Length: 450
Ligand code: FCB
Image (cartoon, rainbow, N blue to C red; front, side):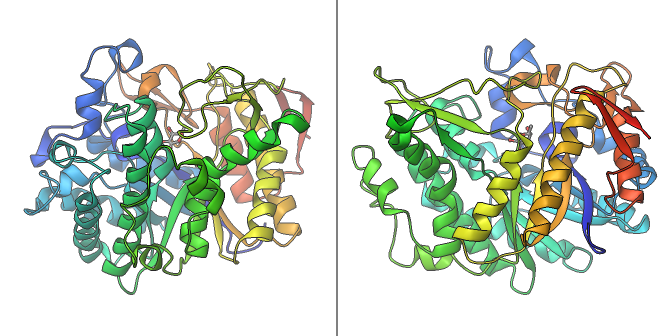
């Protein structure tokens, strides 16, 4: 990779911090959801998580050992504004000031994300993201955090994966707040986008981006082309088009006609949403293969019940996601070809495996995806950075602690951190400026240094 390429790792507040009732933090929708029986595997919650709130210094030292150039973390809105609006708790902001200072002290660039799904519960009680007011509250909160950290943070990300917030949170109910209201989910998607646009305005002068979870969507066969178009519309274009082209895709609006009339969209909203981005964050894990289904199935893809996900026959990670590194290259090329040029950063990419510290499968996954990035760059994609998901094993949402994505193993009983082989391998890649060539692939799950 070129000099200046950003090498990082990512985490998020609810997944690692713990300390959910400390220093005035208010409850978030994930506290409520995780406390509801049956919502999270094994009844796990983020109450303690990786105890990063207390161990951030140790974690920053680990990052420095790995040679990370940047660290992507998220700010917990309910630490900053326990009620989601109004009063600001300085103790919450102080935590992020200390974290940012510790990072800068080690020469690691802080990359905060303002919203990685932990909405203050009082805002959900008032209706949540389906309500326009939540977008306005988000912009106020963004301005508060920006003012507190602007002197030491350069790159800001507004939202992480609004698709998950809207469609897992309000359509399937797999994520907090666990509602199953398709029309509300579409409104939520719009108000997340609007919140992003208003936040960009509120943080005038900052370099701001947004992170989307994008993927390749392929039809199983010729008869499935319309199914693929629909899923691509609801997964990728419903966010990309408003942000980068200033309009909703006409076919998606059409598909959603029976679900919502889009009367929640006000005349100036799309101009606000499409304010120029300084970068686009791309989270990529897995490809999608889709088919038309005879039987209607409710899913996150509201408005398109006659569509199903099918097995692509590829190897899977322990969470069940198919592995396709070529999909990352294809996705990046598509962004280059179909959307106005904007610098890109991979803000998440990684794999869950039931691993020992000798996690060769994770090394293989990361190496293949980094090769895909290098290919895309060679083909002219303006990719400027890569953040591995995740620095640490952590609370993997509705899967709880069973799924481990970390480069660093966390023993939850003792909170002991242990570098996995992938962490050492990644440190080596960073030290070589992205040079992957010194590694030889033995088989699908084994890599050796030559
Ligand atoms: C993404 C989330 C992140 C993590 C990974 C595995 O969808 O942004 O928090 O859970 O998946």
